[in-house]
Image (cartoon, rainbow, N blue to C red):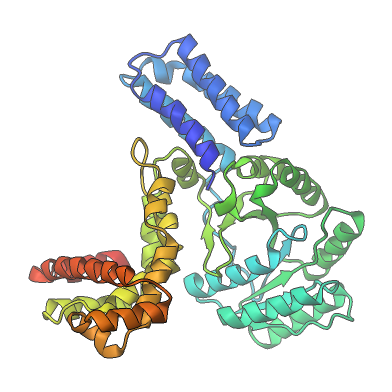
Length: 450
């Protein structure tokens, strides 16, 4: 995520970190490097000018001159101004405003291909899991029957209700009917997935304005592909002018090496980024925190978000059962390992977790992820699935012929089975040590917030 921007800015911070004294010359050099990094990241030029001006003004001011560690203060200035550009922090990170009479109506707007339909399902899952809300989805995209079908399938996948869209009806009529049905079924939230276009046109904006005036949504969220760069900024400005937007959802940020849209769209729309979306999985949606994202961009990690994610996505009952099992000396079998691997995959895999760890000055997260990636987790789960229940419970019984059968069943090599068994053996030893003196129970409670 934002790898290019992150790498460039980390180079700046690494050079400034050890400075015992800041001069106008080295501040100018650092600011010039920051400007170049933002230009390469495809940040809008007015945003760059404003950002660089604020950094320069503070860097040559008294807060740096009086400091005993001016290099560190410069890095803090850079972090503060990044966070200020990404959002003010007051309204950000809170997600959806649910303090209204239900159903709370959320209108998603954006161009075709931005990921609105997938985002609608991700948002529904987020509201169900984190806020225990009953959510209904409805598609207003009558031009694309495939989009209606996709939303129906995604709604079923995340366990949300879905209003049956009749493509022969006008979007305005469908929106009115969906609101009535959400009220009848006592839904807490209604998410309206609107039509898009491959490019912006007046007809689309007029249609959205009419729907907005009819249903009066609590939230009108602009969904934008973060990889669109300057195009995203131009589209954001047009939507902000046509609709009273309340926030922005950035999609596909895991594929965005530059980060220009993230740094520009908030300034252009004047509205906070509420969520960032990653991947196609329905769990790939995170509330957006400007200060935490600034830390991640500068390679300082985001441990707080990682802890929150672990607490949200770890199965507390399974964690407690595992702690009890290990404490009683019953061991850590391959079924337990499979549960742990599955939960790790559910948190976005190794790459997502490494991205939130502070790795500045150490091995880059992407290099670590190359060595331990999500595909490896999937392959390990496949090997365990290829085993019999007895083999999972008693790994020592897995001999040469069993290894060959397991490997064949998972489409892998015997060496992969050996590697998995070795890894399991190491984890078993670790669990045995944790099981002594109640350490395991304390660890699990800490992770799950229990």
